[in-house]
Length: 339
Ligand SMILES: NC(=O)C1=CN([C@@H]2O[C@H](COP(=O)(O)OP(=O)(O)OC[C@H]3O[C@@H](n4cnc5c(N)ncnc54)[C@H](OP(=O)(O)O)[C@@H]3O)[C@@H](O)[C@H]2O)C=CC1
Ligand SMILES: O=C(CO)COP(=O)(O)O
Image (cartoon, rainbow, N blue to C red):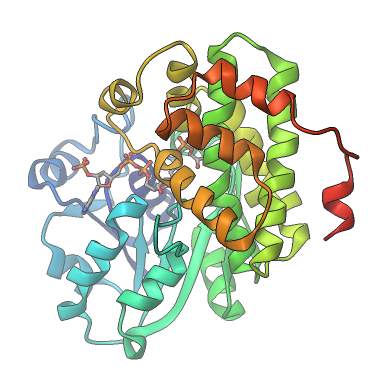
């Protein structure tokens, strides 16, 4: 039994805290809202994020940040990308010993173009960091809480930390693989949200399965190109955190990114979509970051560029699809030959 703290009581933080509690760990879930921590402790529910779900009795919650940090030497960070720096900054005064940090967020920061583990390295004092691990893969919280079979990958530059987290999370419905390609795992995780938004848009436009298969396949090609330019291993993108997560996010009704895209394709404005969603849609911010990163790395990312023009430049989704279909003709494997 390990003591573990999960920071962030949204859908994914709560689902992972359930996995850890089911595995008989002493898991404390931190919410920045006192009423939510109280709901979890008193009623064993988190109705806003996981309606119809009974949380394990041994899962405790707190809104007391210092208590949460001091509870454990393993800290799972499960807040949206835009809150990562704030949470790490607030943690600093309470760090008294080395801890192992696991992050589960899927995004890239606009402007700085940092991946999550890079933000953690910048924000957390190195003398209190035992290791940084990323957990990612095709895993909707809604299915994990039903204990439906799910597979994920944990990656770290420190393989012994990844193996430790594999043992901590793994059980009969949650299978965990290891990988040492942190860049590939984080890039796949963040960029699949961009492609999922685009997939939702083509579904919203009523274009159907051919168009969606094209987006998934050509989306994977441009994600792989970007990843390789940043030093990732190409084979990571064929795995759970690449192709696996692309499939689940582009095809599942559980995906907030797909649902947001679907509303956009049906004519809603971005502001209306974000207001109605009530949960994080990581792909919007990451589209901005990926667009900037593609320019910086001089990597051709036509789908990302098209989505950027829809989200931030007022291009109609139909026009963006037309532009993609009228690009200069090319050999399908041109991109791969340059890998
Ligand atoms: N949902 C899923 O199935 C999966 C999600 N992920 C990733 O996990 C990350 C979190 O997503 P998810 O749990 O789904 O998001 P949700 O929108 O469901 O929940 C986000 C949680 O973070 C809290 N939060 C937001 N800002 C802050 C802050 N500044 N300080 C403290 N807490 C904050 C929110 O609080 P409040 O309620 O007050 O807004 C909420 O509890 C994302 O990067 C996502 O891509 C990865 C795999 C699966
Ligand atoms: O990352 C996820 C599934 O693996 C969740 O995707 P959404 O954020 O689109 O819901």
